[in-house]
Length: 418
Ligand SMILES: *[C@@H]1O[C@H](CO)[C@@H](O)[C@H](O)[C@H]1NC(C)=O
Ligand SMILES: *[C@@H]1O[C@H](CO)[C@@H](O)[C@H](O)[C@H]1NC(C)=O
Ligand SMILES: *[C@@H]1O[C@H](CO)[C@@H](O)[C@H](O)[C@H]1NC(C)=O
Ligand SMILES: *[C@@H]1O[C@H](CO)[C@@H](O)[C@H](O)[C@H]1NC(C)=O
Image (cartoon, rainbow, N blue to C red; front, side):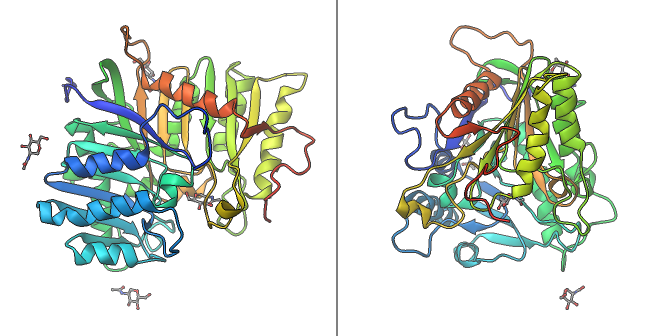
C-alpha cells in the first residue's frame, strides 16, 4: 500500500546565512528567502502558513529588511491571483501589524491560543502550497530570519502526499485557532490522521534517490492518530546512528526550563551519553552563543564534555557557534545567532523547529521531518540529503565561528546573560 506517491519531487536543503558570514565562500544552498519567494510564485490555489509570529517588515527605517518586505509583498498579492492564504499564528501576538495587513488583503488569520490548551506556544514554522509543496525549518516569519539569523530548512516541491500530510498538521492548529480561548476536541477527526509516521514512512524519491520520509509533531496533545511524536522521533534517530550524530541546535538544556520548580529532564542528554559511551558513536553537538544564551546551558554541556576524559574517553565534543556582528548589526535586537535546529547522523537527516529542552516537546507545538536514505542506491550526480546536511554541518563545525567548549572554561559565552 506504500507505493511511490509523488514521482519527481525536488528537494533542497535551504539556509539563511547572516550578512557578513562566509563572505569568501558563497553558500552552495538556495536561501530561505529565495525558496519562500519561489513557493509564492508557484502558488495557484492555496498557501497555508503556521508560524510563531510575523514581523516580515521592520519598524526601523534603516533596517536591511528587503527580503522580508519582498516576501510580505508577494503574500499580499496572493488574493489578487485567486490564491487562498490561511495563517495559523501563535496567540497572543506581540506585533499584529503584518497579520492585520495581510487579513485586510484577504488572508484568513487564526490566532492559536495553545497556552490555554497545553500551556505552550505555537513554535512551528511550516508552509504548505497548493497541497503540493512544503517548507519546514527553523526560520520564523521574520525579516531577521532571512538575513541576520542563521537558519536551516527543507524545501520540497512537487510532492503532494507529503504536502498533504503537513497540511494535516496545519489543520490541527487551524482547528484549535477556531475555538474560543483555545481548546482541544474530544477526539481528532480521521481526516486529520497522519499520512506518514516512523512505522509507515512515505516511500519517495528525493532528487532521484529512494527515501523514506515522515513528519513528527509535538506536543502529544495535538498529535492526531498515527502521528509520530517529535521527541520519540529524535530519540529514535539518535539510537539508529551507527557512526556519528551531528546536532546543530540553538539551545540544549536538560531542564524543564519554564516550570516552577525547575525539573531535571534527562531524555536527550542520556541518549547522547549512551550513544557516545555505550555504542561508541561519535557525538558532535553545536550550540549557539548570543546575549540571550542561558549560562546554565554551558554547565550541562561541560558535564557532557567531561565524558571524553578517561576512563571512558567517549567520543563526544561540544562547540559553541557565535555569529560575529559589526557595531551596526549589534543594534538589531534578537538577531545575529545560529538558530538552526537539525541533526544528521551517518544514516538520517532530521530537520526540526524546537529548541532541545523539555517544554518544547511536552507543551509547545513544533514539527520535525525525517529523511532516511540509508542503503539507497546513489548514482553519479546524485546526492542524499544526509550527505548534503553532513557537509553543511561540517562547514559550520570547522569554521572560524565555532569554538570548542572545554570542561574548565570559565567564560564560555561572553554575551551571556543570567
Ligand atoms: C496550478 O499549477 C499547476 C502546475 O504548476 C497546474 O498543473 C494546475 O492545473 C494549476 N492549477 C490551477 C487551479 O490553475
Ligand atoms: C475567554 O477568556 C477570557 C479572558 O480570560 C474570558 O473573559 C472569557 O470568558 C473566555 N471565554 C470563554 C468562552 O471561555
Ligand atoms: C532508516 O531506514 C533503514 C532501512 O529501511 C531502517 O532500518 C532504519 O530503521 C531507518 N532509520 C530511522 C531512524 O528511521
Ligand atoms: C528557543 O527558541 C526561541 C525562538 O526560536 C528563542 O527566542 C528562545 O530564546 C529559545 N530558547 C529558549 C530557552 O526558549
